[in-house]
Length: 415
Image (cartoon, rainbow, N blue to C red; front, side):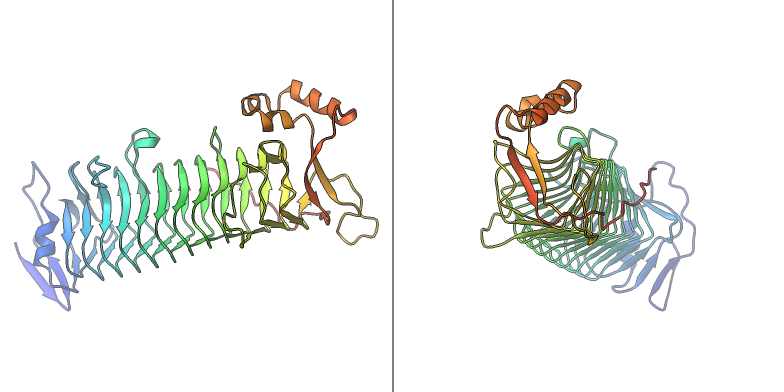
């Protein structure tokens, strides 16, 4: 096989032929390349796996496929400073224990960009790997049941990584475990379970992602000081469908997000957990949901300002016969506000007050939620408001309700 090396580039100028039974291994070309050079394989399909244990750039020029043959991962990056770009990686194994993935990253300052990863159990897996860039990749899992697919991108004890501009279809989750200071921005994820799931991960930034037709948009569990802003979350439906959820999570900033057509807009479970902190939730649109915000219990420490609640079947739900009024509600827009603005200052002359009438039934008795929205519940609610059988609970009181929504709802995009 003839090899030509010039200016740090490795070219194979003799076409690869005669591989009727199997593809030629790309590892041979990698082993022949000099460290810190650029390997441009001739167009075609090669067999994996490929292991890089020294810095190298592999550029497929969008004409190279690496096939793992249904076993293991396609590429193992066990180095610092490698670049993988313009390749198609396909046909991994099926082992969750081994995390069979398109790319396994075990180093720092690596770049994986403009790569198509398909028929791959996991997409990109990073473990104890820092300052990596995962950008503009197209990732999909294997055609199996949702619960046994792999994750599109998985971070484990990894810091200061950038996960940006990736297109994700029909994978399971994007998960961030024990990881901090990562940026997750402008990704487009559809057809999965958790668009983004944090576990014990602090100081991460989630910016301008598009999450549609997943079971859950973003869920933060035991993950403090996270910023979630500019995201579009729509059609998170089903029994567990929700836009953004919190469990024992403190000191977060949730702002400028659009949460539309979800079963539940936000779900709040014992958050903030640290009593000396707040969660700041402002300038979001929560619209056309079954429940705008669902509190697991009577909790405090959340500050809701300048949010727009539009077209929700139920604005606020609190389980256990309690209220959400120990939180701060200020300057929000409520489309069911029945007051006036006689002085034309844009603020209602009287507070917005939300009471629980017959809808308390399904809040206090979970099994009754099946009847939510039915005609019989609507009749009960009407009678309760007309002549209450008992004093209703005040769920929310906003002293300064806005007369107009500050944030407009963007048009929906469907594939």
